[in-house]
Structure formats: C-alpha cells, structure tokens
Length: 262
Image (tube, rainbow, N blue to C red; front, side):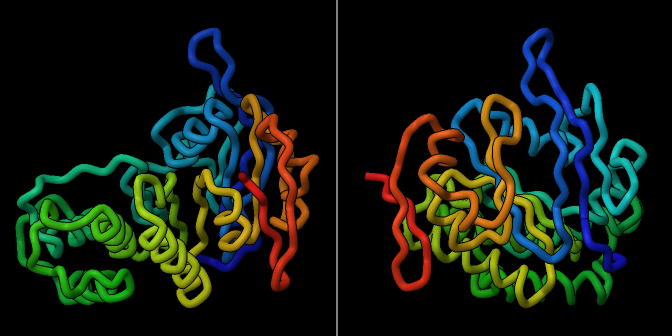
C-alpha cells in the first residue's frame, strides 16, 4: 500500500433501516499508521458503522473511501486483499485445526483452482509468520474447539494477519474475555500497529482500554459523531456525559488519564 496520510475517509455518511435513521452526516478520517477506536453507548451506531466500513452494508448516502477510492467501486475479493476484518462473533467447526483456520487468510490471494492445491511458499511463510506474531504457533495442530476464548481470539487475529494487509478492523476484540486475555489482545493489537505498521480501526466498550491503546477516539451518540481526537482531549467529564449520558470523573496517575467508573 502506498504511504498516504489517511487510510480511509468517511464523507457525509448516513444510513437508515427502513424509516429509522441510524447514522447521520458522518465525516472523519482513519489516519494511516494509527489506532482509531470507536466508542459509544449501546444503540449509538457503532456496529452499523463497522459493517458499512467493511462492506457488509451499503450506505444510503455519502461515501467511504479506501486510499482515495470508494469502497463501492472495489470488488469484495480486492477489498479482502487490502483489508482484514475480525468480527465480534466468529465461528468455525470445532474440529478444524488452528493452522488450517489461519490458512484461510490466504484465500483472497489464491485462484479458485489453487485453493485445492498445495499452498505456495509465500502462503506458508505468511501463515507461519501470522501464527508466530499472534503467539498461536504452539497450537498449530490443536483443534480450535479445544482452545479457550482468548486463545481462539488470537487465532482469528492470526487468520487476519495471514492476509498481510495494512488495515485491520476489529469489532470489540476483548468482548467476553477475562481481564488477562483482554490485556494480551490489546497488547497484540498495539504491537501490530507499532512494530508492523498496521493501521487499526476497532470498536471498544471500555474507556480506560481505549485511552491506553488508542491514538484517536471517535465518540458516537444517536448515530452522530459528538467528539473526535486524542484520548486525553476526548475523555473529560463533560465529554463522557455527552457520549454516555452519565457524569464520571477522570484522574491522572503516572502520567496517564483514567476514568473512574465506580
């Protein structure tokens, strides 16, 4: 991918389910080489925005551009070669082995006839690299159904890494995980960004995790962006109340800002 300032742009984006507006007049950019996190209360439009930006829904008005090209113009196969996606609910047969599942990340780069042949050296290299980065190499021959929730999440991220794209979408990657695996997943995401230059767009619920692991925050309420910027600017008591309808205090400790949620 060419090195440009913004990986994606959203322009005048609106969406409705029937007569019910969900998103309205959204304008923002996803800067290349950064971690952008979307936050908002339930029903704020986070999931709808995620599905629009990953071509699972089609915008009613406005446009979404990937490196200057509207995603409507990009075929799904080409999109999969440029964008990796890890959704919130991922399923796979319990008896499939980890290596095989991760190998599916190479599917967009193989023709139909090649999918039934031996993997290329490049495929093997990228599959092994993805498993090593995600720390699931040791599970290579394990059945996915035997893994814990946190281990499975790292396998899904490894499959996305096998695509070898520069843009990664994650929908609530820490959902349903205990705190140990939440931190491990977030540290992995930050490593992908800092060491491997992957641009990340993710949806999170936890404000303190967003503060620590994000470069930029988008705060949604009722389908509109109510704030955007660095975490230290977004997470004020006034802005939290604007996003969530509840006033919470923030404190600084060790040079970091935290939201007091209890």
